[in-house]
Length: 193
Ligand code: HEC
Image (cartoon, rainbow, N blue to C red; front, side):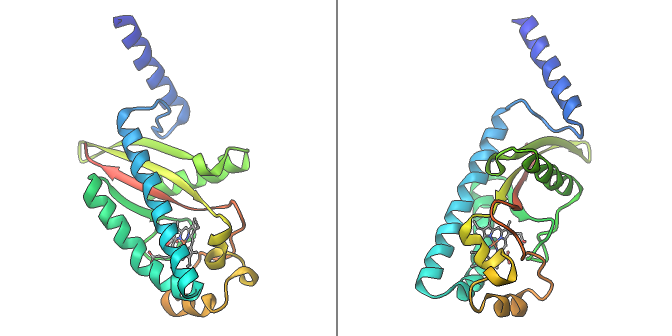
């Protein structure tokens, strides 16, 4: 038993080393918890957007997203104890800018997707030390599906009225021009255990 423990901690140390930047490969319970939160929110938001598009238009759904997305992240944070938000290398919400680890992880996701990994299951976790205390961090990629392109696609694939609405609400928007399956951004979670 003791040998097993030593061996598994050695494996963990090795995988940590091999992944660089302290990315953990071995699955720890806290990662499953983060994964559950990160995978629960996007389908809920997608449903709200799908309904809004069906009821009104994609242009109106842009306004719905502006209101609903941060509200859902806040609710998930309050319910789960994780700080939940979305980030992107080409953000729309001016606050959705990645920090250093998030940026490096998004770049890692792009590389792994290009190398053939399924974009929807890309994830990365680490424990950082901040002010002498551990901080658990988890990210999960958000690839585009067909519907996303009506608000994030190239100009000729944006739904009618969307470009105008985006210009009014997000004058510095960088989140258009995406193709199907491309990684649009990621869910990012952190928690001090
Ligand atoms: C109805 C238009 C619309 C659709 C459809 C849509 N989005 Fe967005 N998306 C937005 C808006 C508006 C924002 C900015 C929300 C905010 O202010 O927080 C946004 C923000 C994001 C962000 C946060 C980072 C950033 O750039 O601000 C991600 C990630 C994202 N969208 C991914 C997706 C994915 C993946 C899909 C499809 C499953 C999708 N979106 C579908 C309008 C849309």
